Image 1 (cartoon, rainbow, N blue to C red):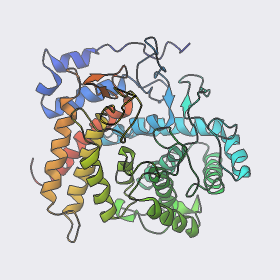
Image 2 (image 1 turned 30 degrees about the horizontal axis):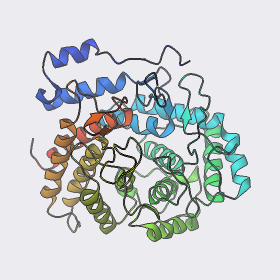
Image 3 (image 1 turned 120 degrees about the horizontal axis):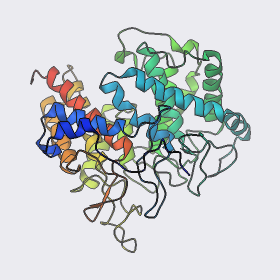
Image 4 (image 1 turned 45 degrees about the vertical axis):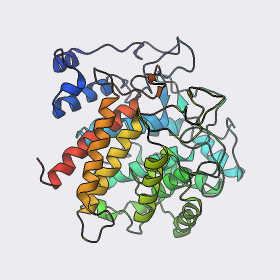
Length: 417
């Protein structure tokens, strides 16, 4: 049983009811949309700083989602940065550190194996965790997901460089954890060996997984790649030495796989992570990824993950054309286009004219809002125009908030406010 601090059903808070005042979400002013969406996300936050993936308890069939996924927590709490709530963001990442510390022995054990780690091998940290006890929840699907480690390394380094020391408590122990993680990643050959990727399917070599780990290692490596993001340069490479050869090997591996996601998938929604949050690809690679996703994956109610996706497929006997459509894809595309619009303001940028990217960002934000519920919730997906039970999906709700805030910031830079 899940503890009672996990909310079994979603009810509108008094603040949300007050903000709506009989109106639908689409009828609200933009700033009030942001407030309502954020209040819904906060309703999924637990006392320890984690976010359940959704409120769904599994009572109507299928897996329960009112548990922790490590990736979901890290992406769900991203919204806090964009609304200026760094204390809540840091609390979430310190929870992730606690979970990694709890299972650090698996990193040490896995690093000694030096071969592919199976779905539920003893050496693999599981992606799904009980929200109260922090015990692993076993399942048959693959847990060897390298992008989880890449996202963690990337964002912890990013926070420290911004002046928020997420590892200030038990700093020595956390530094040991980080070094164990890098050793684990390099000895299980993260840049050449398969994993189960963002969608927990495979195993295959995934460009999104390689890119995530490459971004994480690059953030801690002192090569200047991410220096443009920070007003002051904090030398975090002293905490976590990352050899240059790891960066070079990862970059070469990523270039070999791109523009595909994997051998079986020439394009995939998860590849947007290579542009945001990481921007670990070249400008031309970014444009190629976006073109593939817009041309092949965008649908009426969202973006499909990849052609032939069987998850919640409307007709598994004829999967092509019947894939589930994910609203978070609209929000993700909006984020990407607003980021490229801002890059386009710089002389010599490949993203010209920047106003066109700005228009795309606003277009996809409107698309995202059009498939949210009347009270401002973003479903995980739609099948045949009907959402599944995961309403809202925490990291999708977060992506909408990030997309909305990115539009505000981009409009300021374009002097449109």
